[in-house]
Length: 264
Image 1 (tube, rainbow, N blue to C red):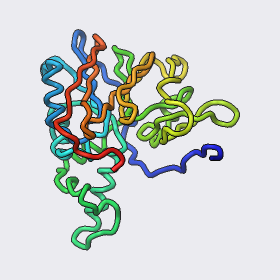
Image 2 (cartoon, rainbow, N blue to C red):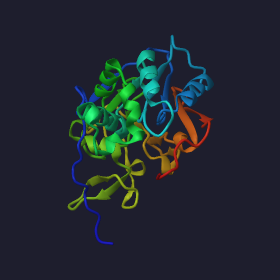
Image 3 (spheres, helix red, strand yellow):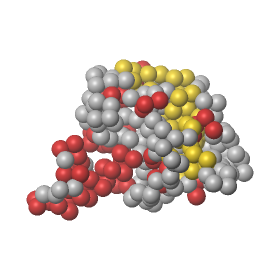
Image 4 (cartoon, rainbow, N blue to C red):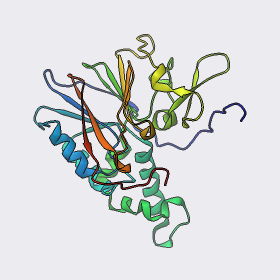
């Protein structure tokens, strides 16, 4: 009960460049992939199903490369070594905090949440992998395709430079703000799905006619007029899904098994 309240700010890593532009090669394809969450076998299977050609295709991951699935560290290394582009997800951010906490605690141990076994995998991250995660932007604008890639979402009416880091990595819904406009909600229990409301706004975010995102596994594949959500719950035994441009074709592969229980 009661009115929804805006969540207090949460700690986020700030990348050197929050908003980047990717200019793809003329005549090339771009394969946009949903939340991988360490499901490396499924990622490789999905790329094969897309007919991935490393010499001509671009691959862009919507963030949350890690946690919940079986091969988190290996997924980061594979994405980095393959030259894939990726935006920053909340779990990628958490991995950096976990590595910092575990390194600081060292042999002394720690009672922080990052000392838990589920974060032990971060100890396998090499310096190149950590640098890759630290540099992940919050958004990537595909210039030729006029597509914006973001992990969780963007608030309508707000220029990219003014979007909050935590919103771009955790939002699911929009709630009406006092006096008009919107604020972002991480929970889906109040307000409306942000992707239903987003429209191209050339004067606010130039050169974008569609947004591709992940994060919201509970809603699975989301297909709105101006936004597509690709998190289809692979780590929960669902599917890993790709959107192939410029043909706007969806391709999916089944998860090998359920790696994590939803909400667990």
